[in-house]
Amino acid sequence: MDRVCNKCNKTKSESKFRRNARTCIKCEYRFRQRWLRSLVKDRRLSIEERLSNRAGYMGAGFIMISPYLLQYGKIGAITYIIGGLLCTPQVWVAKQWNLVIVNLNVTLGYLIYLYNL
Ligand SMILES: [Zn+2]
Image (cartoon, rainbow, N blue to C red; front, side, top):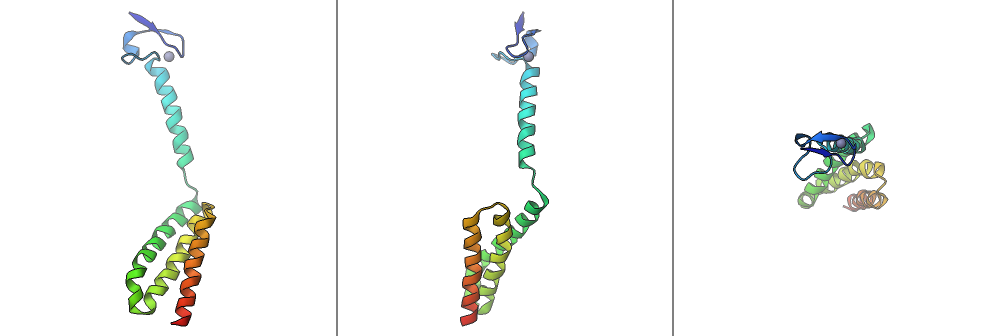
């Protein structure tokens, strides 16, 4: 028994269709492939984004350990400042200006803290 595809309007045998599907496997695959390819193209990162992402992860690590180091004198404040500076390029490239302000505020705040220590 043959069926007609609703996309290419060709008459094809039953084996060319999935169960209860009105579109033949070939048309379905073509659309799916194009859709997946468009997603991959969108997800490709530029070199600045890649570098700033790595720096951002390192900065996040520094900021994460800082609260526990703060009780041991200057080292906690220094890791906060390094973390704030490393995190800034990532949010700058992504144009997330609120987070740029937060990171610069962390850096400035702990510079003042370090100056008064
Ligand atoms: Zn078709």
